[in-house]
Length: 223
Ligand SMILES: [Fe+2]
Ligand SMILES: [Fe+2]
Image 1 (cartoon, rainbow, N blue to C red):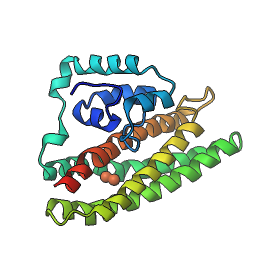
Image 2 (image 1 turned 45 degrees about the vertical axis):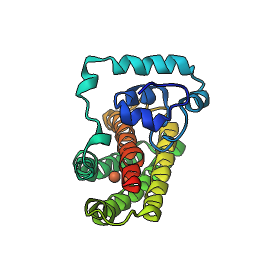
Image 3 (image 1 turned 60 degrees about the horizontal axis):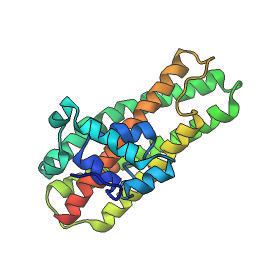
Image 4 (image 1 turned 30 degrees about the vertical axis):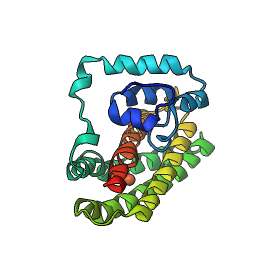
């Protein structure tokens, strides 16, 4: 794929998986905003498109680039299995772990930072409830239907894409509340670990949503 300013962000991320490192570094939304042209996404973030293209080309030339899995060319059932093993199963442990940490930091330090930690607790609980329900629906309803090759469930897929957009908005809010996950000078160990855990959750959910929105769902509807 020859990358130009008109290339779609999600398409670049699909065909060159390492490009997501460049997108994450610059805060370019490649999962929910994957349908946007690269030039528009760069303009939104105040970035020079040519510089971003050259950074992506550098990742494409990296020695490990050819060894990275291309999920757009794998069987759909294998992709579904990968999503469940790589993203869903760890979330079932990670979401409650982070909830306990958010609650603890709010309980211990809420008097010092009531607005920030109160908004964080509220937004995190909203995100967690949404993701828990969403994972359950994917695992119990959507993924079995996709693997069984049932009729293209386009309206059903739209509801899942809407959920992803809502999760993306919560992640953005958490990034704002936490000041881009920069650990405050006075933070204790749990607070520090929480900020790192939330940053990792964001990276992971962006990759996860990208694989569903830009790789899995288009294949199902095209299928
Ligand atoms: Fe999922
Ligand atoms: Fe999903």
